[in-house]
Amino acid sequence: MEFIKTAIPDVIIIKPKVFGDDRGYFVETFRSDLFAQQSGIKTNFIQDNESRSDYGVLRGLHYQLPPYAQSKLVRVIEGKVLDMAVDIRQGSATFGQYVSVELSAENKQQLFIPRGFAHGFVVLSETALFAYKVDNYYSPECDRGIKFDDADLAIDWQINKEQIQLSEKDKLQPLLKESNDLFNYNNDLYALI
Image (cartoon, rainbow, N blue to C red; front, side, top):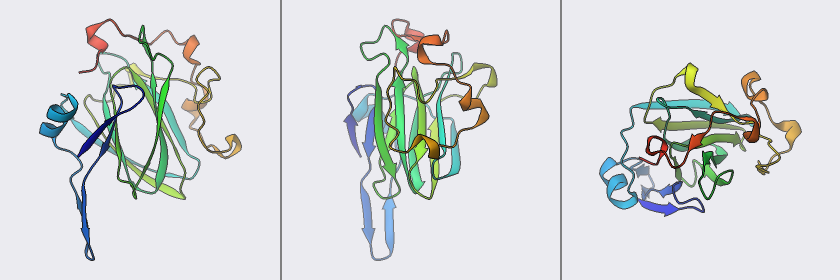
């Protein structure tokens, strides 16, 4: 596995080694020892999730507050998505900035999104099967979000706005500057684990 720091160093792209021949392929998608040794990521993933979505479905930008804040390791098993991680750690040098990565079944890349980031993706293929690991359980009481088209974030989702499909929940998310539920970068509780 190759671990690549992005423009926001806490967000990491993981490129696995793919071994293939005329029968198919084999890829190792997660090894906790390599994560700890090569990237400094020391987390205990406790749940795996999967979603299937059609073209234009945009899920996000989501995050959870402590004590249920989550780090995520995301990948695409089928199809292609544009994945986003937005820094919502007040006091961070990269607050309000984002990392955008195309994840696909073809490139097999993964993205590690630490606590203190809002996460979302939009489906760019006909359908996409999206899988991710989290290091904390889902909590409806701690579930929060940021409006996907917040002008201050200026995210290019690479799809016409008219083609975007949102849940009712995501249609009602606040702008980043309107949110009172953000992370404090200087508090160890919210720092990268």
